[in-house]
Length: 397
Image (cartoon, rainbow, N blue to C red; front, side, top):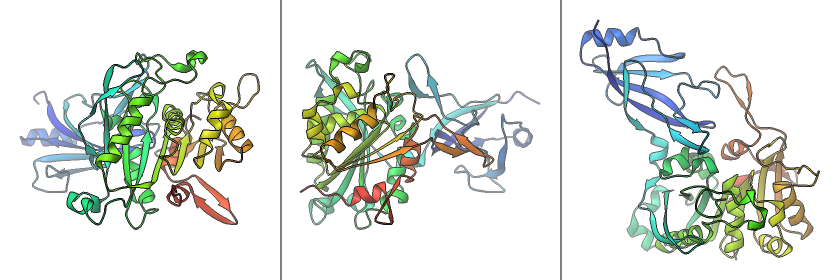
């Protein structure tokens, strides 16, 4: 049999642990190629193999062969991202296998977020110009711009999500898929905004939000930085421009959250423009206790906040080496001291399931997993309230 090199399209789906291959749609031409595919040994277990059309739909006469692999947090070969230790970034990896060449990668969940031109002529902390890329999701009724200018003006709640350090770069799809941010556009979250749905804005930082000088140097490595970010003014301007150019946004219902680096930047954005946000939901946030001055705490107290973190988080630990409250623990303690409206979901650990349904423990830092799954709840007066339900109830005067 001749040596094979058949092209395929990888269709991705977002999972809690990153994007994975939902299916591989492989093109073939000769009968011997189909026979080869039917006996091909993939690196892991396959749920099903079918002869199909070009979209992966069953077709007994189709000239494509589609496989659906088993996925799980413990299965590596179907994961679409790889972690680059040197740069501490997620990047797409080559999904090709022996005899099979990946020619195209698509992700329908990410495609629900519109590809936009970057915002340009923004300024870094040193005055240099920079640009920030982003993607956004608009509920269906807001995609007709005529309606937006008319009866729908000022009616759409907006959720702003700020990614973690590993999702920075020049491809906003990584900011959507590195954490399962696409869930914010799914029914599990959108159902809390039944009349309109909620828009979702996902900016991407070229390096990371905690970059002190625009050269990928962490501000936390130098506490005298006082928590400065090179991108504070640029991100604030992006948000202002987005709201200005999207008249559908309800100015009284703008919410902001993010994980880790994005949780840190959520705090920075509230400090920058506390008048803008109706509520905030930072997760495993990395804003250091040394930067929490009384004046800043008073400013943060103006915005209702629901924090999420895990007790076994080793990346941003909740207790310092000296035994003092740190990060989320410290912020909650200081906000409660000034009678701010703050809710705290302090998880013992972050759990999931393997491909066979067995319990699986994620890294403690990954508390964004239950948050994006809408599993963060609190009991109020005997009634269980979900985080996004609470978020949707908040309005800015």
